[in-house]
Image (cartoon, rainbow, N blue to C red; front, side, top):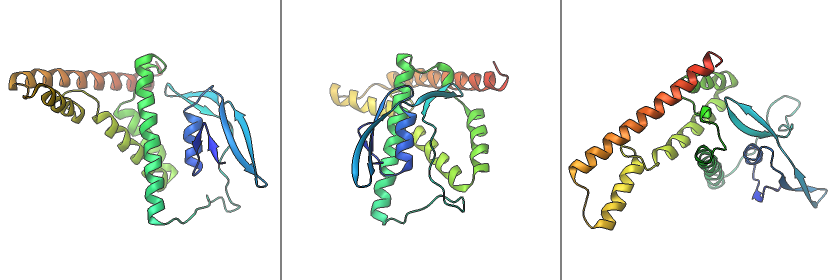
Length: 206
């Protein structure tokens, strides 16, 4: 596999990310067979889990006869590059999800809270240390992106304050900052209540 959806594929996870991001949409592929580049198309089936939509095409990674995933040793520089590419893939996936929440492509029930995170953590722990660390990395990147949202009390809100200060030439007053911080706190509490409510409805099958 060389390319998928116009994106260069470096490893199996890159391919999985492209397929998952395109449920029901045709994805152009570029593969190499017997030293020939072939252009193919595939349309991932739309699946859902916990109200999240993602694509599947019914293929899996190759496993050796020992049922162990083959590994490739890479240099530290290449490892950093691959890590950065996978991290950016998670960032774009998170931004796409947030955009889908705004446009209606994603259901509000897709938002999960601490109960859902705990359930998924348990599943990844049973899958092994590598899978669990990958899940923790995914969760960390998601939280980093959410922390940059322009909501007061988050880092993204502080960046907005700095931008406003740069445009106005003077900082906001203490009273203005306090009022905005209160608004931001209310927004965060509302999001947490929303997420935990979704968790409870899923737990009771509602």
